[in-house]
Amino acid sequence: MNTIDRWSVDIYLNEADGETRAEARLAGRAAGGLRGYGTARCNPADWDVPEIGAELATARALSDLAHRLLETASADIEAVTHEHVELADR
Image 1 (cartoon, rainbow, N blue to C red):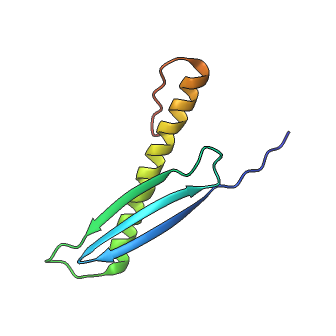
Image 2 (image 1 turned 30 degrees about the vertical axis):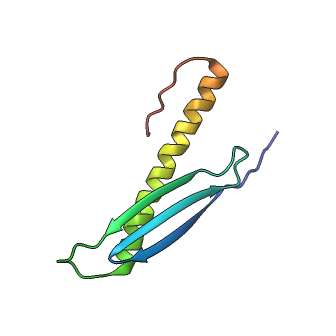
Image 3 (image 1 turned 180 degrees about the horizontal axis):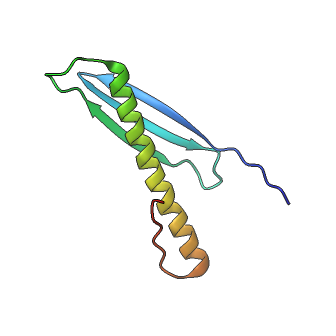
């Protein structure tokens, strides 16, 4: 049996006062939407390049989302096996 599923991630960005905040929302999962968060701050000595802040905040939000998804998978495995599970990042 072939199963095709589609999950997507929407990234929401907000920039104010030299700080960029990103929220990564996982959509399409039966268990509900997981969210990851990330921020980036512009050092006053650096050039203000909003694109760099968006990239950093987004990367951090996606990393946070990945960790949360691993935690969810661990909990799901534990629920099935009734054994403690620790999943590595790789």
